[in-house]
Image (cartoon, rainbow, N blue to C red; front, side, top):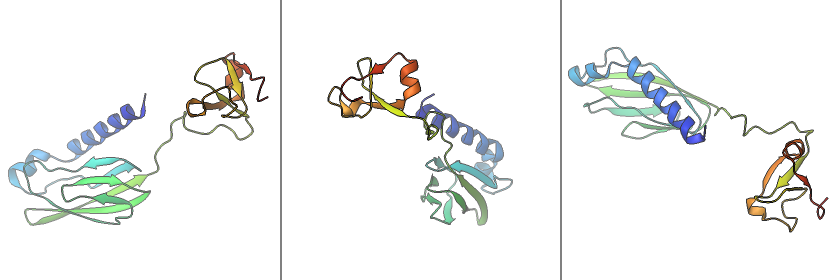
Amino acid sequence: MNKKSVLRTVMMLLVVFLVMACPISSYAKNKTIGKSAKKLTLNVGDQYKLKIKNTKVKWSAKSTSVLTLSKTGSIKALKEGKAKISYKVGGKTKKITVTVKKKVESAESKPEAPSEEYVWLAATGNCYHSVNNCGRMNPSKARRVTLSYAQGQGYTRCSKCF
């Protein structure tokens, strides 16, 4: 799964959570708060749109170093921590606690064990290189992999840089 797909899935889950936790139709009909979500959890870098259908809402936030909040209810999670968002509808004020967690790294982006040796693979060819600018490859298209991965894929040592 690529990052866009993961982000899209997370956003859809958050929307489903918010819809299930907040009876939106009662807000639009009565313009009263009633039962509402009290908590929201996001990852650093996530963006989220708070919305109460067919109702004018005034949004405000404390701990703006953790997140940004626009006048229209758009949130961007900046760093790990907690923030309180207040919103006012029909003379009543409610609060939501937003928890921002560290972004979960995928297995692909985690660095390998420090004892592992790394080499460079060119976009084409069947050799691995000790440096990304050996002269026999384009450094802008080179990728860094572990030596064991390169050898397991059948790559051989470059005679120039090894």
